Amino acid sequence: MPHNEPIARDLIEAYCGYHEDLLRWKHKAEFANEPATQDFDQWADSEARRMIRADDARTRLGVWLEWNGILGYTARAFAIAQGEL
Image 1 (cartoon, rainbow, N blue to C red):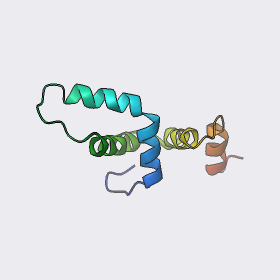
Image 2: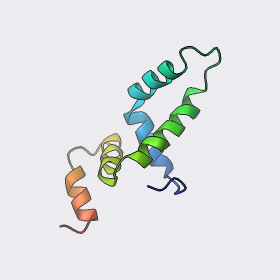
Image 3: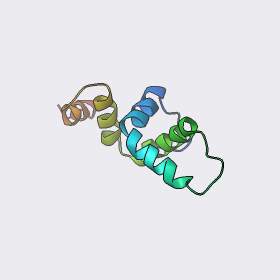
């Protein structure tokens, strides 16, 4: 995904929620030795955007589906979206 392409807000929220434990751990580690810590929500939003851009389309779809309670259908939904079924 190109850096300047907009990212849907619900996908960012899905990534923040799905990866919350990892994001909290990374935030704590990144700012462990700094007196003023960057706001977690703002930092997590930026980090989620970075993760979304780094992931492939199938992974992004899987995170979004699972976060929205749709489990076990990533492969089928991706195949349909790609015109394979």
